[in-house]
Image 1 (cartoon, helix red, strand yellow):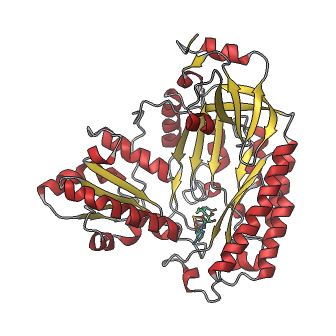
Image 2 (spheres, helix red, strand yellow):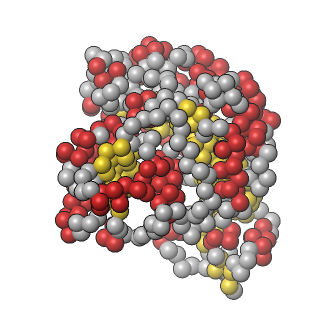
Image 3 (tube, helix red, strand yellow):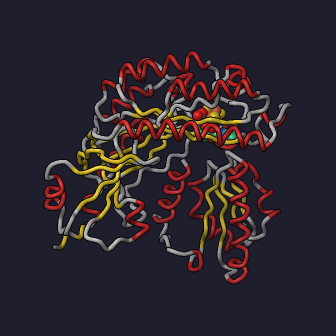
Length: 458
Ligand code: SAH
Ligand code: SF4
């Protein structure tokens, strides 16, 4: 969501004659788009602002903006604490951004814009590209805010009430992205399953079906699905809509009913497991990923064992897991029975160790299978080593969201941009902990190269 907001900021600035530059030292305006979800993210902002201080002394005309959730959360406190900050831009104020530097020039006072509006300020969908790099994946926010009030979470306080965007506006934005070459769209919201419910408009499965009809779009993903609102209709969409990827991120947070209740998640481990079964019945081999918080206040060893048993039962493809951290606005900050940080740390390590083994086995079992892979560019290995060898390692993802790398172009130099966004069939022959490796089937490589426009030199 922050990436999407950063792109929106870059777009509104570009429309107002600003240009992206490559380094801080030549910038006239630096925007730090922040996240407040965990304490660690906030600490990162503070140390980054510290590093900007000498630059600001050298270049007094430089304007520093803190945007996003920490801006919303702390408002004027940021200006009091960091004299290098000129503008605090809340989560509902992106559209105001272009005018603010001039406003400061005229009246040299720090600006704080943190008013929250119930209405979504629609940034007009814009086809403007902010870099010349070819992109394959695009993000589109379909709703903002959250009304769920999980007791650990700061989102409802910094992003405001849940509000869904109009379907026409979402479809218009996706069409523009597709025209610019995007093949895969990720629809974003804190709880996409409740899209449109409050406004009594199009439901999420209906929206998915409209997006599925967009010509030229190849893949649809979405985050995040709240398990309490995962309807049978949405489960059915995995089977009936051809572009919806075979993957769901379904954050469970804990395997213990006692902790789920204290978190105000409004489902039990039993109903969660039922929904996982339904998904697997509709869409065989669906990739399932999740989020966990370990060490929530009052989490006993037995509660954590329930989490471990849930992981064993579901056999996730991968998990994100975090040590619980107090967020001052959220009620859990005032809960008793806080968990010792060593215990949180040990639990997190135990969880990761188990998941690593599950992922390893899953990946191993995929050797010999073939998958359609949407090419995203050179692999991380390739970029790191900048190999000059005759082969180039490309990278893409399967519908299940697994990273697949493969070699191409035994004796060609390829213009990577010309093959990004193409889908190829790859047979897996090696498994690693975070990715798979395979070979291109048939003579697809030949097609890849000849289809591209001036895409290679011999
Ligand atoms: N809307 C999504 C979650 C968004 S926040 C949902 O309901 O699933 C992303 C993840 O951050 C959460 O799933 C949770 O695992 C983690 N998280 C949120 N608040 C946290 C906190 N106070 N401490 C640790 N992790 C937290
Ligand atoms: Fe936070 Fe819960 Fe809303 Fe997700 S659903 S953003 S965890 S309050």
